[in-house]
Image 1 (tube, chains in turn red, brown):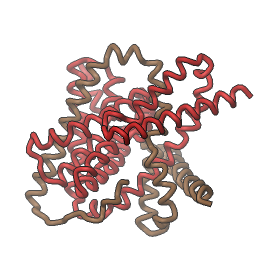
Image 2 (tube, helix red, strand yellow):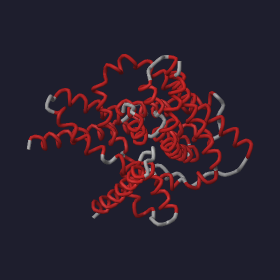
Image 3 (spheres, one colour):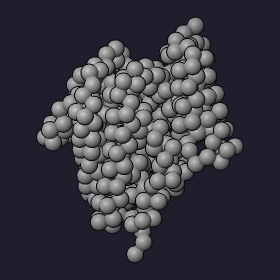
Image 4 (tube, one colour):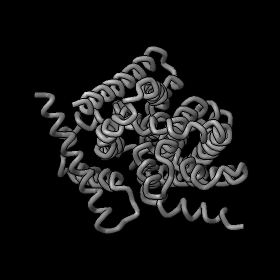
Length: 235
Length: 131
């Protein structure tokens, strides 16, 4: 009885915190005001305030995360809607996404090795450009840290959405297709939302890149990342 | 009525997710079941076995609120605050540096390829692509 009550409370807090985060984001119109940051911050605060809550939260976590699987499957729908954009630029999209994704992972391994952050953090970081539900699954397969992976994915999305367009202009990438693909590859759904504001083509290509990267990484990362990490692990 | 339609559509998506997970498990593929499920659904839509309208509402609801579903996972960071305080700055440096590397490579590679092929293919009709 008590457990069920606690479960409902935590569920209400989680959904309420998310709704508040979304409302604030719409109100401010800033990528920095992210529903995941605000939502999880509120839930953590609520759990810290109520000693009881921490035990109850695992049930709530299971209930809410049960939707992650079906939600990832649902990502096939936007990819299907973008199929024409994908078909007309198929070669560019595949090559661009694959090289950019690889560059990101190599940069993580190189920078990470240089700052000696350790294999678990390198693994979680190397998944940061993949959309969260898929990054989480790969992290689970490879023994990464799921909560850390999730927060890194969201932070990467926000970073790309904020600095991406300016940085691309700085390095003289002006082609709308290239800009959309670049931000979609590095910053998944959050970057896609930002590129939709820049233009129709940019938004569509970002959507293509984000789904394509999810599929490519889902298929290749479980083999590729351990191999890259083992390369730098050698003395 | 709308509630039941959404529930049925989400159940169908959950079924495809189960199927994807089952394929990965049975064939011992080192691939996430949700990625396989996504590919299965894309194939079914592409071949016209499933009409987009049959699942569009449920799929839209789930993808729109995707971030809600991983808030409980991020909450797990509570147990890792020490790690974040110690390694936070390094994590941020690697994160930003590697993101810029990815942006640069994809942007430049695509622009190079586009110049070579110099195709004219304005990708229209995608305003509604990601709502």
